[in-house]
Image (cartoon, rainbow, N blue to C red; front, side):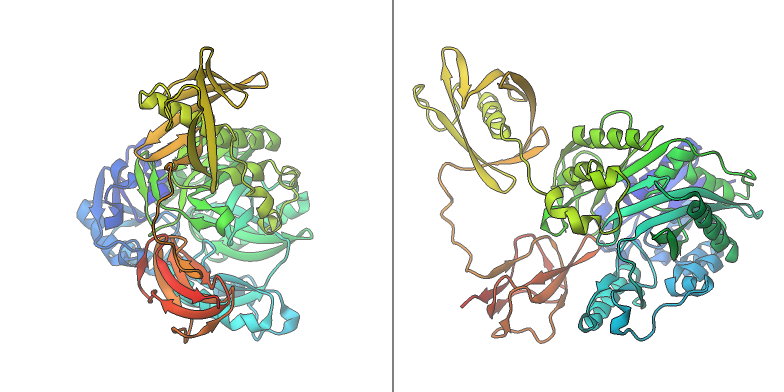
Length: 614
């Protein structure tokens, strides 16, 4: 019987596994990097072991250090989580060789399916050999790992070599394996997968389907179970193929078989030999705890001959610290507050006040809603996201709400090109016009000033300026014998933490929160602006600034001061939060400065290069 489990992962993943272990009375052990010294998963575990270093390659990808940590902490089992070493057969063998229980599939099954090229061969498929124009578009894909890393769509033959190089570099950084392959790219397909669970006695469950079509950069954003609108014949075919894949490698434990579905035809993608981020929607629909089942299977227990019956519909949304309007740029900083309404499940690896760093994936949390119908689950999740309190770096929350309410999604007509078609409309800013006024009134009460602002002559309006959604907003209000007046808006109540305004007979509440210099009105971030502009030196035209903190992983070959560059030409690549980001020339001209060098750590706003537009 398992008594103590080390989770070879971090963040939300480790917290999720720990929750089930604690419910079952199992002691938990966390491992953590130096950057995660005070991370939530280290705080909720019974024991934590520090791995020296900060990057994944130094810590969470060091199987030897993790096995030593498990032995030192007295763990008798290792759960790999999902990501990092979860699909590494060598790590699984090292755990078993140390006399520990491996909560996952046999190493041989991992080897058979962990490489996407070998998995395709096992299913009677093969990647493309020499690519011709008739094969386009194609997808360059890393043979190991997942999460959308090491993937590139190629639509022109002259782009293939660059895509192969970029995919190899990203795959090597993320998985320690630079093998890539090329396969046909299925346009406008739906990403559908089947959850499987198998025991050591020959029982294999196929726990329905999931649709994961809403993706950015080949990473999932919204997932649901069951996949809506599939014909019964196709649903049965997908389940049968998934069971066939599991039986082919004598699978044990939880796994996922993934497909692209187009024109009611299933195209096998891969088998992930681990639990998936989106597993909670399957748990909600089938009323099971997949981590608890993983533990029981690892202990040698039998599954029931048939899985439970599915009930209702569940939808999950991934909340990321990123700006979808700026090419999904990851965001860092302090997560001051994260709270969601009752009635939805929240899986997170962060607590209030935690720092979001540059080393790991930018996912903050997952919100999961379950209801008797798909429409009910959609409404429930969108409403919970809209009412959630999220104070901290920019997130994709507004994008998620709009996505869940988009007609193409509500009618289940979406596919993997959803954001390619709709991103501009879904990210069109819609700041609350009354938020700056609420901030000004709350600030006046907070500072104890009767009038606030910069003038204290009652006959003159008080003026304050704020930056909101990238624009400056000026608000004016004045004190009269009847109370505060502001541009036709009646001030019903004003205090340092709450302002109630009435416009056109409708009252609205604005909760105002401050965390040092950070200011939030409901969920809108505002920045107070000084009365007079800061007379600091301006950057030279053509300056190229780091859009995010990260590491310079590549500089364009042959790039040097004096080179002629074209607007949009790739100059260098930054790696931030496990993703590679291309930095291009802002204008056409001559490179007059190049500050960035390979391996350099940069902060947001750091000067990388200067292109003289003349």
